[in-house]
Length: 413
Image 1 (spheres, rainbow, N blue to C red):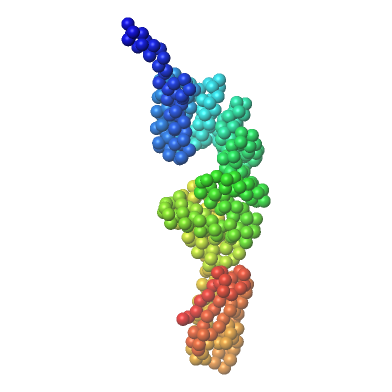
Image 2 (image 1 turned 45 degrees about the vertical axis):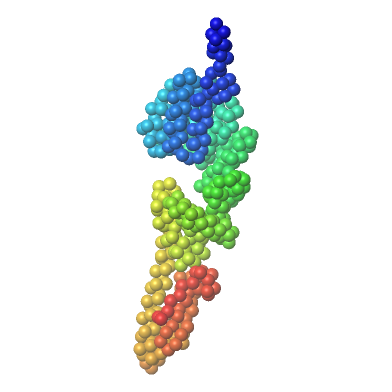
């Protein structure tokens, strides 16, 4: 009898599997899946969300089931498997209710992404994200409110993007979610840039840099510095731009040396692109060509033409500009080489100056050249003889200073 009483007491006193205060298995699995997702292990996160969904269904925890199904669908979407994600999202839609804030807000966030990416309907996606924002503010779900504004800044019109970026920043500040402020200011900078508001873009990117540098991740810091350099370039402040971009390039090169991946090579390409475009603007064509030719294969490898066609066009236009001026100096090189060869055959020596090629004398009844061509920047070529048969010709480039990296020099040595 005593044994039976003790057994009964034990059965009464034994708590449920996860205890009164401990989280349910589905809650624990959902938290683990979220953590894995934040680490960008999307395959692992997708499977964990599915495990969380199975546990939530077993427990009868409908709200967690909606969250897990929606996020598993999002995992498939990120991995370019929308056909696998859609049934999960459809199932979440049948269970979701606006009476359950965590499930409803999560569902709206994923539904909007499917409307954007799968249905290709940005206006509809924007309406979903706006509704998500209002709902999350009402229920003080600040991180999700910020996520909603972040998405409007992607799917909305340029005017909407400015308005909603400001709302997102306000929500992040109110919810004390400083980790969101870097991306939000960065998005606002991008929007101002698209609107041609270069001064506002730079101001936003400087703000973004401040918040990114409060974090611990290296890549966002590098990207922030690159964006500031780009901002100065668009304002025509070449010196300031180069002061940011050259260290960024060295940083990107170090990271690439540690791990030679296309993603890391991309940032070498982007830094070289910016430096090359500056060199084009400054008419330092050899330097421009070197930077842009280095950028081209790295950015082609990450399919930049697909995700940023405007900047890809700038790269191609920069290469054309560099090649055009290079072609001009190349033509001049052949003109001078031929004229100097004729003069040397007639006089058994080189002329003292290029202007001599336009003169007539007893051995040369007609000028070898009608006029001495100017370099692509409208300046005279510098010419000097090294001995009776060897010469050097130099264009001092845009800056007009000899010995700088935009010089174009050739000789017949």
